[in-house]
Amino acid sequence: MRLAIVAIAALLLAGACNKKNDYKQITSNPLLYSRTVKELNNVVMQNNFPPIIASRNYLYANIAAYEIIAAGNSTRYSSLAGQVKHLTKIPAPPAGKEIDFNFAAILAFCKLGEAVTFPEGSMKEYVDSLKTLVKEHGMPGSVYKNTVAYAEEVGKAILVWSKKDNYAQTRTAPKYTVMDTPGRWIPTPPMYAQALEPNWREIRTMVMDSANQFTPPPPPPFDISNKQSKYYQEVLAVKNAGDSLTDEQKHIAEFWDDLGTRLNVSGHVEFLTKKFSPTGHWMNIVGIAAKTANVDFPTTVYAYAKTAIAMFDAFIQCWDEKFRSNTVRPETVINKYVDPDWRPYLQTPPFPEYTCGHSTVSASAAEALTSVFGDNFVYTDTSELEFGIKNRSFTSFRQAAEENNWARFYGGIHFHNSCIISTEYGKKVGDLVNQRLQMKK
Image (cartoon, rainbow, N blue to C red; front, side, top):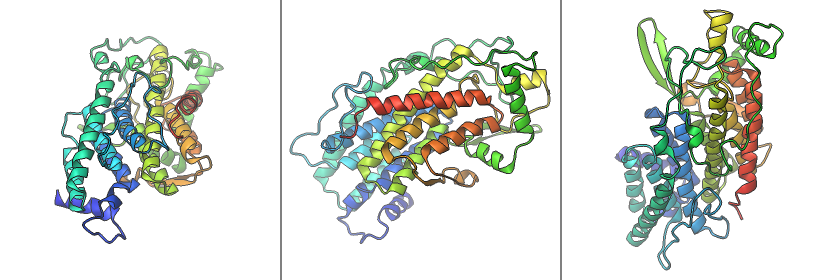
């Protein structure tokens, strides 16, 4: 515990005089918020939560933090109450009581981050270390008490709101029916897992009017017998690309893999490896962008919240189409009709092919981030270093989203037509978020 406190203090107080009354240097440092989001990212990864469920954790945690920042910076930011579905008035800070709004935002983030899906206590050690840190660096007892109380009050309001998004009801909804019908999705090796979250379209959207507000055109009809058909050409393109990947293409595929949990099989030995989800990866990118742009604490929280909202709705839009079209994966088609020994470069995730979740979410996140930091934003994404994958650099968030598009095709898990359509429709979701949400004054 003491080592954790020292590590956080060293990060936030580098170059400072480290006096015992310098707590504001800690709580005003935007790196602390990014570090906190990363802590939730680690909890999500270690608990094997899939990408779409993870998006729900990031959503409510960041909204809770943003609402506190908006309350403490009312001349710069507007509450999301009345702007996102069913969110009513948020508790106002008590008059005449000093509150550290930045620290309250962090506490509310952690409360929602763990309470939305995880058992309570998953972030307790981290929160306790932060509380100890600010006390040791001089936060007055009255400020500490007021701050904790306000974080608790706002967090409780957001938690009540979160429980009305239909998540609990979808836990007992009917599962996907597997039918070995030509063109219809069936489980894929090596896990042969059931379809993931087939009822996610029933989750309450934040900004979209409904899950099917942006309905993409249907995928090319299944036609493997006609070698001139668009479908056959799409299948052949995946196989040919997978058979001749360059080192650069492999790097792109690996960098954007973000499968979450991967089952590795070697002979009779099976073991799991864990990585970030696509939402976790883009949460990391928000932190990198905030640090690159050297923005302040409130702007950092704003960027995270807006991006989380865009990705949350993008997943709902995508999953609505996935379980309407129920499209078979390239691996299944190629193994059955072309080459029984062919394997994609990446492991195929357990849900229908059309549309592509990674491409949809990445495009929506790119639009949200562009609205905050501008286009032609040069940055280096270091997110995958901890998994042994070298960095990639980009000249804009949109360029990163486009590369993600190709990554799914290079990985052999999506037809390229799906990636193109998904990027287009993810952008529509991101655009809607930018148009409808009036967060920054």
